[in-house]
Length: 258
Ligand code: APR
Image 1 (cartoon, helix red, strand yellow):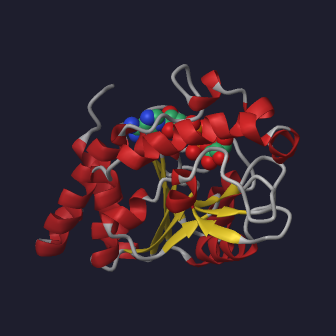
Image 2 (cartoon, rainbow, N blue to C red):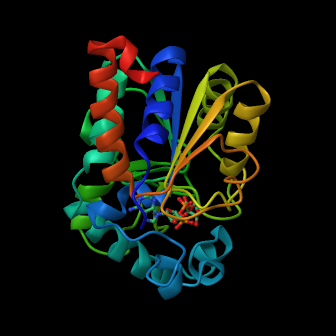
Image 3 (cartoon, helix red, strand yellow):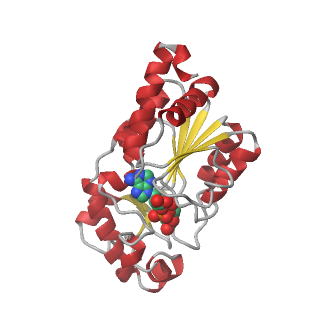
């Protein structure tokens, strides 16, 4: 990966300091350096588990035991994952008063673990299991300790409270994410292939309402040449680490960002 020119970093830091009021939209790529595989790409989860066969609500209703094979592997990986410099950098930006919220497509809880307080979980959170028959909810950890697949008192097999294909985005998360996209002056788009709706519409909504779009991703995406104003082509932890360092310096020596 080529070195990102200093002036590109300075421009991004300058925009964040002068505009502030930033929101971050994150995808699986921000957690790759925490040991959690992304979904797409040769090493992605979907290379092992075909999402059409394992990640739809129809597949779960048809054969929940089979889908729990994937769930338990994913939860095992999430258990061991720790926040990396990118998650910590976003929490620091929130403390600086530059970042107002994180909208995450991830279900790994690493933003909260890093100290971010305003996190919108667009695809739910596996911390709870829900019964699709009587709607009773249980804490995941205790329930799973009792065996896989975990069962509800009513006899149905429980589902982690995450959004599968064919399920709606939780109403509150969708509303909050949309209002954050409309309200922000800068949107940081970190580690997402921007291929899954409606999350992938968020950058366009922000852009149409005047936000400056900064994309952090080693690769280009469908956003890069259409919506993105500055692309920082690097890994989330390296780029966020450098960016936060610059933000701290810029705030100490304001003219540094020009
Ligand atoms: N740092 C930053 N970005 C990275 C890194 C890294 N270290 N490694 C990979 N990436 C980028 C990839 O280039 C890719 O663009 O992260 C992106 C990961 O894309 P996906 O695997 O498609 O993940 P995501 O965009 O979050 O998927 C969205 O799809 O299947 C659903 O529900 C699932 O929430 C997920 C949604």
